Length: 183
Image 1 (cartoon, rainbow, N blue to C red):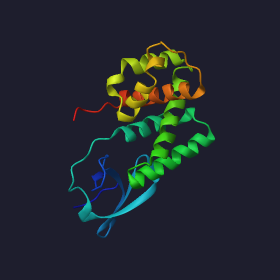
Image 2: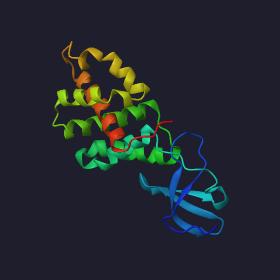
Image 3: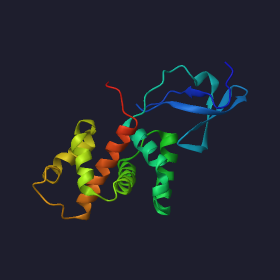
Image 4: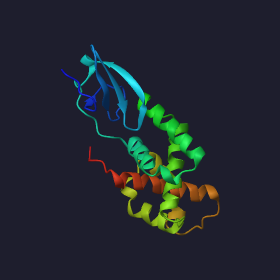
């Protein structure tokens, strides 16, 4: 098999996330140097016989959230950009994030959602309520914990409540940007 630069290839991964990379350099004897579009300055060396024998896996919600944040990174400050770079680097190599890094990613999505909605928490609540069916297990748990805020029977009284609402909204916006297919 001839591996052309910039071709997309699949590799075997131990997780259920997308398993596609791009070839940076495919003419290295029996190996190819790969990179992931989320973090193109990090390279992975793979044997050519390990490429393209697995079918492609569709992006999971974590990768869609990273894509959403990356495509809106101009809205982030310097420290948030550094957090995003760390998330992208680790995800492009390990393809999994710790709960703490998932929280960082959620906060970044919340910051972007807040900017996109001009910090209008009522609009954020409307978006989440309209799209509650696409929330993952984690965000659905938070939605149920904050149900009284979402149905208007309790007022938002803390910064953490506002942040949680915008974080869920960021997740919804990421899912709407690149929807999944039914499994």
